[in-house]
Length: 93
Picture 1 (cartoon, one colour):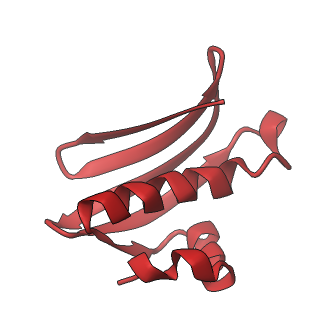
Picture 2 (tube, one colour):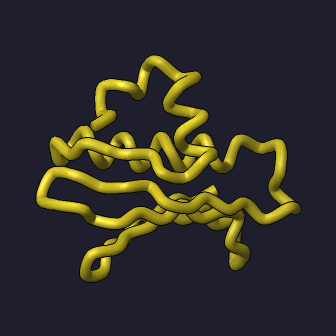
Picture 3 (cartoon, one colour):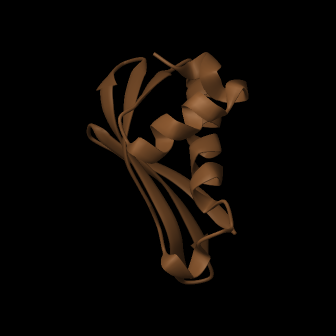
């Protein structure tokens, strides 16, 4: 599984790919120099049960830590994961 993070203008995303297939996508809006808002998560039904969403979230958290960015999880999936996973709550806004 390959994970990519890209940013364009005021939006960004983390994508999981396996071969030529997109397994999952987590999008975010750049709300300021040190703040992003995760607004959407989707996982291809073929890849359900493989923790793709969680892995995407961890990639964005890793990027946020490197850049000293805080995250607001607007997406229901990301919000639920932040409540459940104490090891990533340090980047919450």
